[in-house]
Length: 549
Image (cartoon, rainbow, N blue to C red; front, side, top):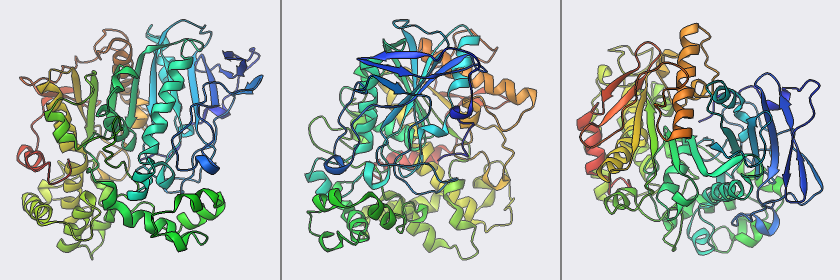
């Protein structure tokens, strides 16, 4: 989920300073200085060939150098093709696979600074690097004496990043968005030294679909050779239920069938050539007429199981956890208190009822029109664990308050929050503790100034982590600085408690014996045990295989 855009780097100016440069191969990459943050920005650098024409719906082709004498890197590249859903329309293009760097001013090659690399969210259908300004994080690293480099990039979303169905599987075209992320990491490895970074000290972090993408990559062989640590904000490997490509044929057929020049082959199993020959305009016009994102009917464009050797989503997370087949890298994983509220908006309607709740819960788990008996039985039992009692619903800690909506809204929000976010996060934390993998967990409970019916909603933590809190009070500003210090400390030392920067509570490691979280709240940051809603969340774990988790 994306918030309204932060202040764009492209509107910040340098004053009388020589433009910073990076030498990448034979290309001089010219960026710009950001004097307010004492940083330098290099943007819009291609890390892969444009995924157009015959490269549409294909693996990214790594491009480690721009291939020109001089490259103007003073602005972000265009975002990948997508609908306008959570804010004003972005400047979009199919030629979108570009990367951006923010580093301390004056950084020299071979300084070997740790790198913090961001993966944006957006329900796998929207998002762009230009929405996120990493200069405050880099500036904070300088202030606390632990400089870092911030990197972000674009990856393909929607049908361009996550082709669905058996044909995509046959063509080796599943999970292209994940492959774009890997390509970006390989570009960083190839060029880290020249822009002053250390390729052996990359921490990857992301939120929502970004964190889920990271989680899927944590299940893939060799991911620990690309990064040394991860931070997953509101997303885990099992947030999206694992489904096979063939189960998602209908999604692809509806997409292709909406494109006039390709509709005739929509169900042929041979659509790729037609789609590669269609114009970008025709595809986008048709795509925008589809429900690209429908929380009531589940997500259409998501990572899909791929059983090929070396694939990036090789199995159901719970099964891979049991066999220890996940990256043994240190990580932070957490959620916000009311993750499900933004995904339960349909239940604010007076027409919402039990049948709608059951149907939407099933659709969140499986795209099948006729899900099997084991799944339907599991969902029926799940619904009984979440009774229509407002005091037990989300937003939590609001008693019988209904905010003017039907009581089923709080019930639906509680189910969505646990099913997609809290149960998967605890599942990951427990799996790591079982295998003695170092990890830290959090629960973000900071009260928000927005709609109280949303509670501490999905994505609420992002501006606080990026140093741009919605509340400008001294306590809020100090809290935001503490969060940046935890994230930067972990990036530099693999421990959020480096003793540098702001004075802040010690964040304990999550272990089997002491499964503790850090509650993040400006008025009460404290250690809590990871046992909230234990009966409900244990049900999700006990039925993980039926729920695709």
